[in-house]
Amino acid sequence: MNSDPDTPLYLTLAERLAGLAASGSLRPGARLPSVRALSEQQGVSVSTAVLAYRTLEDRGVIEARPKSGFFVRRARNLPPVPATTRPPARAVAVETNAIADAVLDAAGDPAYTSFGAATASEDLYAVERVRRALARSAQRHASSLGVYATAPGIAPLRQAISRRALELGCNLDHRNVVVTNGCMEAITLCLRAVTQPGDVIAIESPTYFGFLRAMQVLGLRAVEIPMQPGIGLSLEALEVALDTQPIKAVVAVPTLSNPLGAIMPVASKKRLAELLEQRGIPLIEDVICNDLAPTEEDRRAVRSFDRSGNVMICGSFGKTLAPGLRGIGWVDAGRWSGQVANLKRALSGGGSAVIEWAVAELLEQGGYDQSLRQLRRSFADQIHIARQIIAAAFPPGSRATDPAGGFILWIELPKSVDAVALYQRCIEQRIVIVPGTLFTTSTRYRNCLRLNVGGRWTAEREEALHAVGRMATQLAG
Image 1 (cartoon, rainbow, N blue to C red):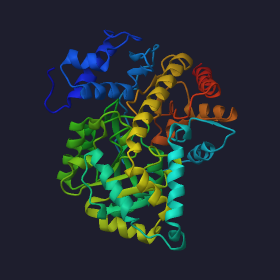
Image 2: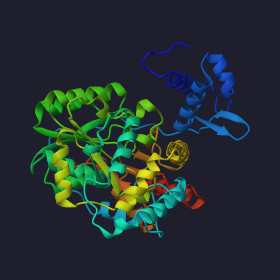
Image 3: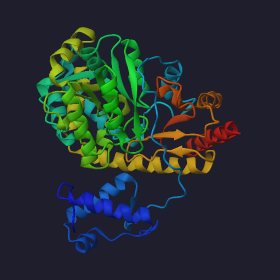
């Protein structure tokens, strides 16, 4: 089988099969060759065939049926994806509103059906494995409960994080890794290290509202950079902004961006690293969802192309180990590592050594990679079902992203629908959504919303999403 020498063989095979499914040559419901038959047909090893099928499973293109084999997934008519975003080109002050607090508060309230805060159902995770690790840690390291934990965190966890970063293509020195209180603290520390109040920061548009809240607290201004469907940040638009605005840093989620779920191609990630390095402008890279991307190439971080310590890489484990572990984050701030470590010591000190020991154990166990593969497949199913409901229940003209991983959808409703009014109607019905206005510093995205579809689908949850569609249809007129 012919392939690009720079592309892994399994990925070439997966792309070929995905193309056949997309074109209709492989029809929905069609049975695929067995792993051994595929390897013989394509002249590849069995392990290459296994990886190709696993990649297609993670993307939601095919499904494995017990004792039956692999089949192309059946799909109904699905909504189109949104167009490239068009934010204002000028830098503006950052302000957020009370809806963000209400969304986060309702996430843990059983009285609400929440499509709001970006957290998945706990039963999709290996929670029993996590519980056992925490119990062992509390027993083995009980003495740590009697002393203050100190920054930058226990060495075994920082070493485990450095080893996991190899999966992102990054060689991190564990001595430069700082354990933080979640990814948002890591990003905030990075912003403090490289900016002053009044500075201009380039951000994706739309962007995660948590970034906007941090920037507001720090007195920073934002210039929004357009996002392209599927492939993320527009480097052409970023370059124009760098030429015309006094940008001091860039904050981005190049892999499975929030809320669009876009993944920048590897070549674009490399170009982004080079572009900012040439100008001496730091990139604060959020890799919180990289492990949920379907392929090794997709998971590769921009930091892997960094040659001068210009990329400050931040992550956490709330999306991959268990939602309750989102409080364990980390950062390697490149050439600003010393400043970030000092800021961490001054502002919040250490975390919980008992939890850090448990997370270190979980990262080093072989079961982590297996649980990640299962998560990717589960989230692909979650996305697939949600997009089918949106196609059936939302007003004509609605668009929805089709992310390759994760569990977040961005919905673009007809222009006549005010998503804030829809949010208010949903709250009256004890349903939580997030209106698009939270993801920008401008007045754009008024007709957009973000949906967390990581909650396990039940009849009640499916009906709640249908109800959101009915209310949106009523507002569309």
